[in-house]
Image (cartoon, rainbow, N blue to C red; front, side, top):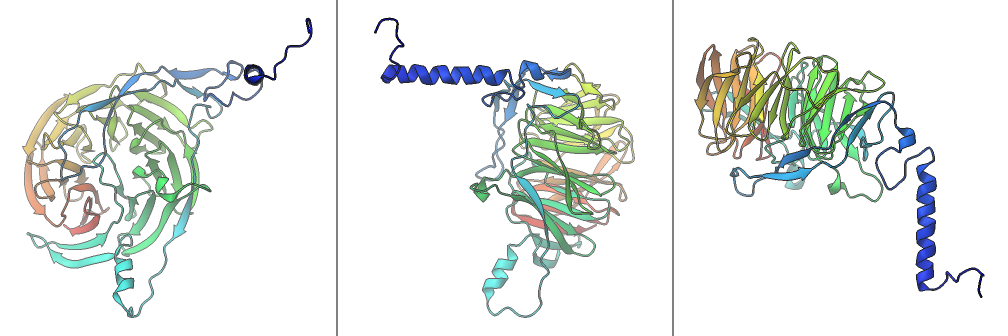
Length: 453
């Protein structure tokens, strides 16, 4: 009938009604207190004075584990970060990622004595984290070594999954869990584990990509491949906070007193003060992905290694979020700068290890921006640590020997001291106990070795 309501109940009419209602709800929602469910960005009514980082095209190195031994260097993959990051003063920004699942503390189950009726329990026990596999085997120089199990250790060159606290407690990430082991008592303390959401498979939990103890050994920070950062009070066995997270894999964590810095695969570096109402207190951006991050012992400089072979040295001032901040020095090597470490007893000296296409150990003077000395190892250098009490440098290697090397360092001389053999695949991670008498290594063979120096 002319002038009457149109018939909206035909096939096309139903679509028009659905679209009209949808559009009306979106418009009504955009003017309310909460952002629209279809967008991660805050609405214009919610915007507060903030620091912002523009969207930047970032290069992301493929870091899937190799299929056969050591990989040849793979080309970078282009990845575009199209989401503008907004860090809002006074509260958590709507663009920051929320934790995907809870984390829980699980105490270690005490072992019971007695003989096992058959070999099934023995085999089951052998695959438990830090289960004893072999004892008092001898290396070429006669140092005793203990061989423990590290099941589910991720074979990824760009991860940092092992650290030793100032109290001698080992933190080792295996899959989506972090296990704590006391190196003095040789006992498992417990583990930090993800608690899956209902309906979510365990194997889909984001795996741990890096971890780091605080300088006083009271707190442990854990970063995941999903971009999440967790801070744990180990003494009281409680989760302190879920810190502002990244849009990509967390590849580096380092402490400067109470300040925590994190680096991501998209080249973002965040400076976080867990005590502050707004934890994010500063940030910087580099054009290529972060694969190593470490504050100098005095907290004067921050070193970041990149997937494109650049070693950048940043000043100690971190306030504000500035994309325009530039490093005070930049040095280059032919491969990714993942294995790196500041010399504890000599200021402005840092060592880096070359990857598969390089294999060279270098010592740099960051004040001059030059390489002081170097040594060819003819193998991928996967990890690097300084042993301050012994005044030596320790490196973990891949093919052909999968060994741990010890080097003496007296400026400007770098000399090999000994080679420790026992791993059957590349030595991905290293740690040194507080008094420098033991070296800990974790390899792609899912073994954890203790070497007496």
